Image 1 (cartoon, rainbow, N blue to C red):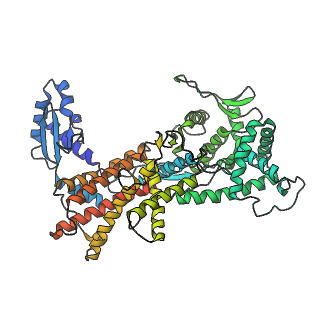
Image 2 (cartoon, rainbow, N blue to C red; image 1 turned 120 degrees about the vertical axis):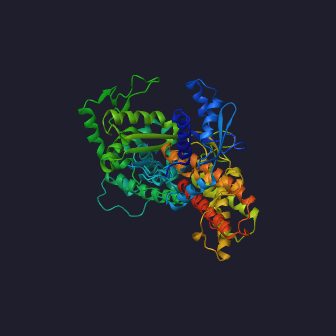
Length: 588
Ligand code: ARG
């Protein structure tokens, strides 16, 4: 279906033309003075210069042409030359009927769907997930769902950090702790144990200690680099140990991502492209893209129009070791071969922006991608504590994601119990569902690139621009629909009717904006637009709800119409909630 605003503009364009002016002037927008009108057109103001005429008289002539319009019931020319518009209820009803009959509520599918890879999550094996990974997971999951909803083929890849120095550090730390492990015995020929020689908590303790030590002790660092090298060149024992780290870590990661409703199609990582690196390096050298500079292999990526210095992209270090860049470029090569994506979207902290700029330029210059392949970086800001500084635990440490989720669930439980009495187990289940919404909505409702403050009290509130408020609204609608069923009605067998009061009409107009909103959220990869939309929609619904009797409406056809409107509102809200990556409970 065409967007409502486009249809309104078409009607306005015809009127401008009929009055002898260029149709292009007839752009209609949502009113910025909702107290005066619903929509407006400022075309007469722009036309004044072009036609050397007073804007008000142009507006007057155009308004005259709209007298018998079936789209606008009111078109008033007001000083200094605005056209204030009211849309016809019959016209809205028709549009709404079209929406309700369509599986995607009037959203047009792309002529040629794209294949998109979303690279998000980015967890590191053997390192605990922290709040930085939270944003990547939450935003990435939503971007994946939005792109999928609007009709593209989307593959989500977690792109694990499972190959670099961090692995060598953990191995070195473990070797110092448990030197007798069979994995370190170079003469061992037999099978390695099935059982991992560590738990996830043990594993996660090794990394920070080893990392700190390597910063102070160059000899320790050299050993970690040596271990990394041994692992990457295929040492049997080290590979077996690495496999254990992967298994233990990935099981734990899945548990964490599950609890956040985050699911990946691919669990690939940096290690998966290890074997592609020699081929890629040879290709870059042979084609004259890469050269040796101070011992390292680099590709120049600066461009004439650069206003800041863009350093060369380093492919191999002087000791021949690969880097973060190397695996990212090899991953692009692999993705192009295996999936032929039209677009790859990366989600990380915005501090990696320059890094990705280098990688993208390098991939283009070396033709790892086709000229049409879109490489997009969505960098997000920091999640801060109430002091405005990066979020920390009470004692100043890095907050583990697991604990953050647990704290949010507990706060949610407290709020639920404060509100009303219910059995402990039911309250807990509910708290778990709503807490995910609180956390995700709190994050997604901000424009991704901005920093935001993690305010647990605000996020878990049932009032205001919050996840719980949205869910509360969905549940309120569900409960009215349930009562309607108890009265013997069937919400699925109701027909929409013309809105006949202001709050109902306002709700209908909000609903009609769904397709335009979803399309721009996908184009701009902007989940916050979905949040802003459902907040407005929920407000419009609640306002309507307070002004309208629904279940006690006496006119049977009108009552059905209201129930149909509720059903559509619920469906649109739940669709949006789903693309944001959470869901509403049945009751609360
Ligand atoms: N593991 C990285 C980190 O923790 C994020 C990976 C992002 N994705 C990528 N293709 N580089 O910072």
